[in-house]
Image (cartoon, rainbow over all chains, first blue to last red; front, side):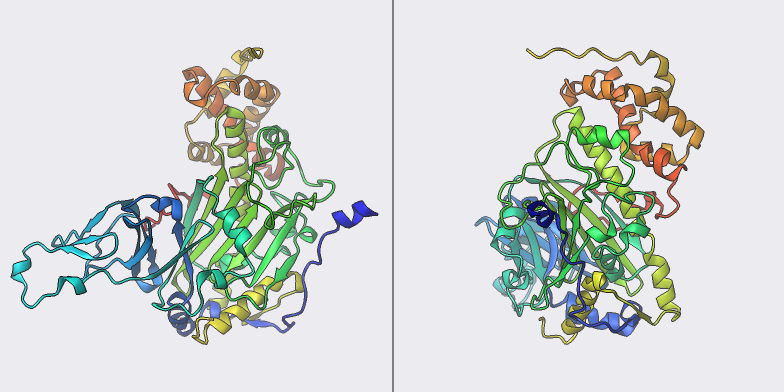
Length: 407
Length: 116
């Protein structure tokens, strides 16, 4: 009896947010998209980088939001603070930095050589005497709101965000901040692409378990049955509308190949095979559902554009950014603890990443066809079941954000 | 001192190893996509019986210190991960219910946002 209750899978979802069909024009409307740029991408917290990528004074990354034609510099200053600025020289507007990452304790604009320090202050102007009435102290780089949580750097183009980042991300509490912010996490690999699909469709594809049995019938069918992927919603949260969880079946029914089983002897990279080993994971209390013997991962939707998969010893981050209503950037990144030291671990990493890669190709397959049907006006509304409740939570959050209050 | 594992005899499958011992995951992906199922099956079933011993053998060395011949063997072993789904799940070189895998460009870091 006790064992049965431990093994029970939580309810698949609920109708607590309603049952009505959801309109589809927010995926295709140019007017809606223009409002999204103003009310969402200029007013919400956006995951822009990893703090470890700006570990030392002068380390920088740039973050480009295509739809806004806006480039942001994120840089560590000499006091150890992470700062963010618009990548715009205050002389005549050129991009100051043109690389995605690098090191520059002083940032020199390639146009005329104006120099800014890592606090954004204008430090040197070649031929300063050539200018007339001129106050160098007022010509620093324009600042952007920035904060760090869970080791990730978030920016907000609102000069005074309506909600601090930590409050925005509730119910993800201090335990998540600590677990994800563990300095042992290192970026392992990732992929990026562009799709002829609205940026939200790629998010939708990752936040419900109803699709698993059919979409993934040629890869992981049986490893995570659809009925083992329940959803929760957080109606009171500003930045975390929902999550979807994944559990293994008591008995695997899919194909577990010899290669997968060999791989499982040496590591736990693959989500789809029960490993004989486990990643280490410090500080996972309150984050990892390790009390449940079948639990694999929880995937949290961070509004507006991130799906954060959290498991023991592995983090998967999917991000999208809009280019136009029907075109987006997509990227996915994996973080692990510990280095690959022997061939068994390398074999496990290779097998796991290929399995996930092939699964992702299936997740990404439907979006462009859906977009066509929305663009053509053939499908004007979509139907959401209770297991797909994160889609409804995402839509509700989207529409509340469009009111423009930043909340 | 732990016992040294002898190198498995792979003399009879050298031809397959040579064909599939490509340096990167992306190289091996393209090789799989451009191969016939006969070629994929031929490689897979030649390697499979020896794969446990190959992994055990390679596992005793530092990755950075593999000899040229062992590096080749390691790449062929990794290619087994690439062909696994084709052999057992798709029965075809390419998954026809997914996007073209080559559209997924390998990133160099979390902040790699080079315009595509």
